[in-house]
Image (cartoon, rainbow, N blue to C red; front, side, top):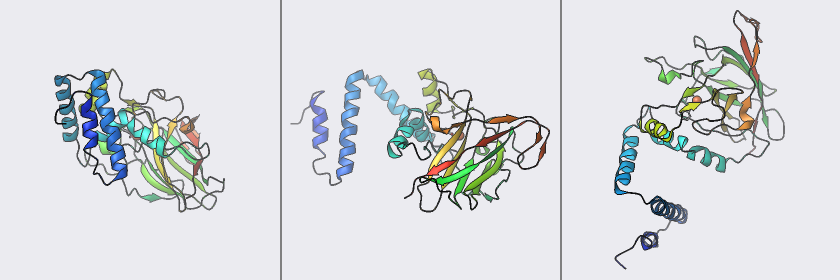
Length: 286
Ligand code: BEZ
Ligand code: FE
């Protein structure tokens, strides 16, 4: 057959993959073509809308650079990133849940001693984080690494700050023999995902806000265990029920206990209130 109608074209495209040697690729492309054609038929896509979609994807590609990944932002805001993460790292009730990496991870943060202040000179309310890294059998993991990063107390990441400020509010902390970690940073605030590109225009047109609730990122890793890319979310933060990238998991929402000005856990005398957070991470052996 050479000519196809609006139904038979789908089978024709799929049949062209008869010689495909990669079974998994064929499975993925078969499902993609099937769903894409069903979508076009379902909404009866107009030619103008199709061109708009092509222009949108072109603009998204043009916005990508080594500093900006608009396609990942598109995936994040459409819930695809968290869907992929959740399918591949299903909650097992015992180990720490994964969530999105986001665009602000910077490899090579300095390793700092236990208790170090990651946020020297960074705006924000002082917060003391502590807890343990455990294996799924409950045993403490010595020498686990927490690679931590966040924005400042106004939700601005170092990469977004004016000028070349270098790394701020980042560091790697290694657990002690009892699996304990501790560090000082700031209380993270809600902030918007980048909105100056096509994804921002899409969110606006969808009637959506671009905000993420206050969170601090970490990749927790240890020899002999699966690393987890995760966040701690500040309980009660604005937007906790409507994260623009759908990254919230109940198990990652944690109280930030507020204390009046006085002596902090590390003995520092603070003349401003501060917060403490205690959270244990659990890694799956393997
Ligand atoms: C973030 O948490 O840093 C983030 C995650 C996804 C999209 C934009 C920002
Ligand atoms: Fe973030």
